[in-house]
View 1: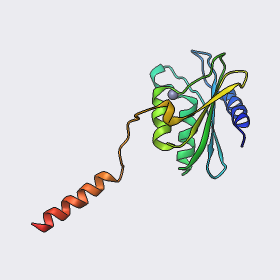
View 2 (view 1 turned 120 degrees about the horizontal axis):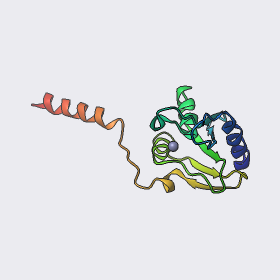
View 3 (view 1 turned 90 degrees about the vertical axis):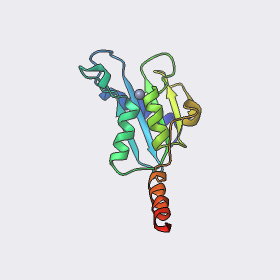
Length: 145
Ligand SMILES: [Zn+2]
């Protein structure tokens, strides 16, 4: 799928945005490695701190369907400048899709592309299997005594 087509899908997804407070429509389109497309839009609620970004919705949508490998994600917003993911979304994208390109588009569907690693250098991460491995190693030490 071409980047511009992904941007247009993101723009379409923004039509479902729930933004009674900001009026700021954002849409996201996440392309999985298996070719499936997952959409998201921003969702505001009375407790503004609990509002959810479009790319967050798209990613959680894909993850909840069991998808774990991704190609790229487009984020479109109804503004003149390119919209960039917030810090929380950068961390989420990095954690679940560390090799993903992020396509950031403005209302005219003009866009720029950066890798998530460029957008979030020195991201927080740890090896999820490491904790179990340590326990196993510790168990070996105890048995050796
Ligand atoms: Zn965000």
